[in-house]
Length: 208
Length: 208
Image (cartoon, rainbow over all chains, first blue to last red; front, side):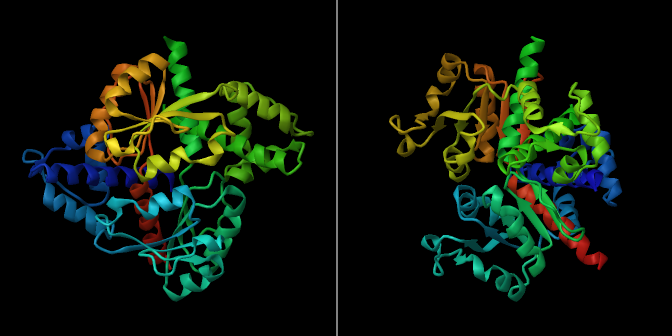
């Protein structure tokens, strides 16, 4: 799973890079351009593509349009990605207001919180009481959720969601969730990311 | 670097787990408890610890206090981690308000933006004009920064920062930065994380 995840991460990064190239008017791209854009090497790029049956032309490079189409098909990018947010704190609210989601067809359908002061059924993204979470998931066949609750509530929220049918979670709580095999969880731990940077900054300092 | 990063990530996850165990009143922990808490196996736990010279007692387990102290020393956890935020949008603002940073001695000292409407020198975390970024870094010997600007501005901001002395960056912009060897960059790409979850949800769907 780890290798697959790394490969998929790179494929998505290629796609981001291609999007920027397209926006700036490029038509063709070579594997070493893509490699440079994401900090890999060009043989890795060709290997990743061939693994998923995407082929280019060594001399002519890849057509950016075709390549993006192939990646989009591979990742069902033309499918709307419906997702809910649980926990309307700082991070949850920031994600609800994240502008580039629309471009990526990521649609936050609803948010949930335990604080009645935050409920807002009329908002563009309605904020609903936690008690309605399971019904909402089942009723609207939601498969993906973002967890942005405090760490002590994360496991309970996760259990509720997965029992109701959630199959994929992006977890912003700084806690490793106990998860069944048929649910995929991706952790984003901001403190951890800062700590890792701090560790390497110190290590670089000592080397000098 | 990749392996080291994975190992360090796990060490930090152990520490998070230990913190929770300590808070709930535990004194001792066995490697398999820690393994379960972060979804690894117990031989991995022992291997990670021994790599950094941390030893436990097979029968008695590890003392939670001692273990946390050792990890804290290893990671300079008792050192305040001063950091600045560049880009006061949704994500930047959410990070500025992130409550658990204080507990972790993560201190956001200042934020920077190009929008004069956002400037606020009197705020708890002052928001300053981008023109002051380089002077501020040099003057206050800041080594770490969070980039939370739109993707098209990220590289330029990064170049300014690293020229002024920044050595570690957490990058929230969905773009791979071109970086010199003596600056460590950690990318947090929210869209990418959602896309990866989406990919696995689809893959799981097809398996059923």
